[in-house]
Amino acid sequence: MQYVKLEDLINYIGLEKVYYPEDIQSRIYTPEIIRPGLQIAGYFDWFSFERVQVMGKSETYYIKTLDEEVKKQRLDKFFSFPIPALIVANDMDIDEDMIYYAKKYKRPVLKSYEKTDKLVNVMINFLEEELAEETTIHGVCLEVFGVGVLIKGKSGVGKSETSLELINRGHRLVADDAVIIKKVDNGLKATCPELTQHLMEIRGIGILDIKHLFGVGSIRLEQYIELVIELEDWDESKEYDRIGADEEYTEILGVKIPTVVVPVKPGRNISAIVEIAAKNYRQKLLGYNPLETYNKKFHNLTRK
Image 1 (cartoon, rainbow, N blue to C red):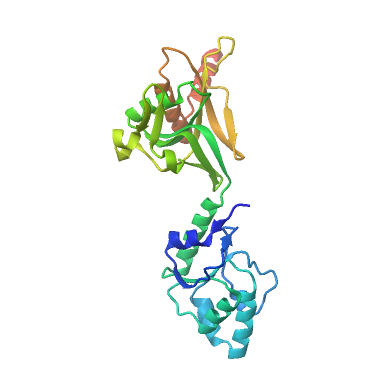
Image 2: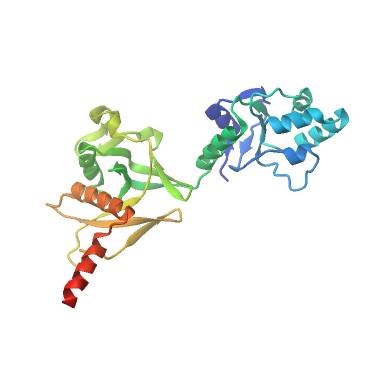
């Protein structure tokens, strides 16, 4: 089961450790956050204790209004649950009894200077990405005319060479050879393994550092995939789509991505074809489909 270490969340957001038991390895298994107002009010049925707990001004001020004995009973019960951590936002002062019961049950208490809503949004975005479903695919990912393109194909078909030509034309590399893909917000976000970041392997030359060769403008750290280009050796016995009537898709992590199959043979400018495929995809997003225009013209001519 995937999880995020509490320490990673602390480092990402810059949280202050008010109480942090070093002998406890707190883990987060869900991106959902809870503000425990009902629990502080005494209602613990259906308490989502597995989530990170965040208190803002409302919860903090409400605790101060409680009778001393009632406050201690509720805090004792609250911290008795195995919560990953309690985070107090808005730089609010933390009640001494909260620290006492946190220490009693060894529950981390953290502090943030951010406003509660902003803090919660940042945390959810971070946790959703870290806990997202993930896979690694053999291929090359680039940004071509603002479109995230994943180039696939068997080894030796020319993926890296085509991509190098695209980078030389001003497009940007995300990952070569191994592309890490995460399902985020029903989209597919591509990144590169840290070991091969902004590197590319070209047979006969070796490993190239794209960032140093072409500058920082030639790379991207991440990119949502919108189009798949499938390169394959030209098969004389196969009938390839010539007018764009066949709509093909590649399914990755349950998400279907429009796919263009490009047959490769000597003399074909594959990098130019990839550029045109990206432009054509953008045209369709804007509502223009050249095949529909062709069909209308064809039907008009046949009626005459």
